[in-house]
Image (cartoon, rainbow over all chains, first blue to last red; front, side, top):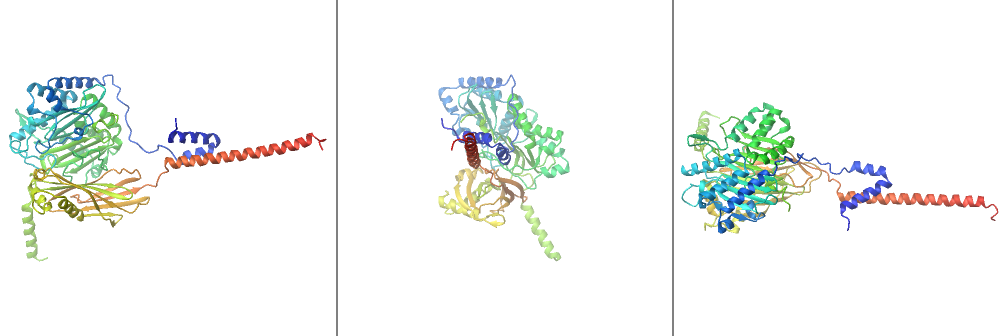
Length: 373
Length: 234
């Protein structure tokens, strides 16, 4: 078998070492190999329970598929590698045409099975957040709202015309075959929501995903609901926990009026800005991790725990940037960016009642780390 | 400045302020211009995404659809893209560099009218090969400042020799000034193999040379010893 370049190199170096050791030592000092700094990566999670979620999610997926007719199943399923994988949006129906099964076309049994599948992949809090976003969209529709228009999710009225949103306008699609070993994906979303969960063996990944909210605050059954209230409040708590010198680093001196890496920006990584988490003290770092957990923790606890460990290990390379007022109740944008994480929180067009966010992992969107090409 | 001029200026400012939307109101009237810059040693690439809000979509469409047939032809699209690029100034190390349009895509009017259709422009600027050391790129977009919101960001360079440093923007993000350093070309694996090969050849030569010397020495020794040991030989 012919040797490759690395083998030739190794052989040459070994030979040279035997005949001229001092020169080899000199070369090794002059040309260090693999000395580039890399972000640290935590050891893989070795929990005995790892993989139990996958089994639960696979079972829920098969239960859902069993409720479908052949035609519905055809409409709902795609190849894992199909373009459907990146074909998600936060826009309403009529502006963006989703594929998969529309909730309004499902029976109550099918709908329940679909939501059970989504719930199986997410944490209890994450599923609650998803339902709060969906209910908010229904509130928006019933109020004849959605007039913010605008970019990335702007909408016309929920009823009438070509633009539709509300509870019936959420779609579910499965990419690949639900399996405990090979890669597959659940795609669930509608107006102001895009959840992409990739399952590869015991690993589940929820990037990229876009949780958003309009209205950001509403009353349902006598309860005040703020789907992204924690994201707002924890962000303000963090910026206000920084001292003046730290805020000077964290606060950008320019306005950020929208998501920088919203839908369609897969694979893009911008130069990070703001304050490095290594410049924060332990309590401030804990607040930062608490902010991050609002997105990471949407996914099931097993996967979220592993992801948070990874993010914590990369904290010295993670930035926090803020733009806008530091007084809670005002308009502010923020971004958390690390080697395996990008989170943006962006009120839309000066509207505190209309929030978009994005959650990405530039190294592992759609489970890229786990999926063999 | 006399009192009358001051009064007139204040009145004009008041009138202008009165036309602004109230704080927190829905902003339907923005034209979002989002730019991403990629810096390399011999080029700067620009990705410019333009999205018109509902209230300005018809106006923006009219800027592009100059023959008013309700569609954006290739020629109209290209003409508009060039208009946008004429409003963009790109400087590398203080010198303006020409920007060449690479690609455009335009949405349907229907999508634009909903405030979601995005115009995508891709452009590139060839720059003189940057030597190792500190450099600076400055970007400024002044297209339709009266109704636009801007985002401008630098992408993490694909070329590991480029290291981005300080970024400076104006408050509205019309412009970005970016300091970066081009690192000296690191020795490649090929160079390393070549050096190892040369070293090996040198070692072989030296060892061969030494062996020859040893053999010669042995031959001389052997010849002298044979002469000594064979005193009766001749």
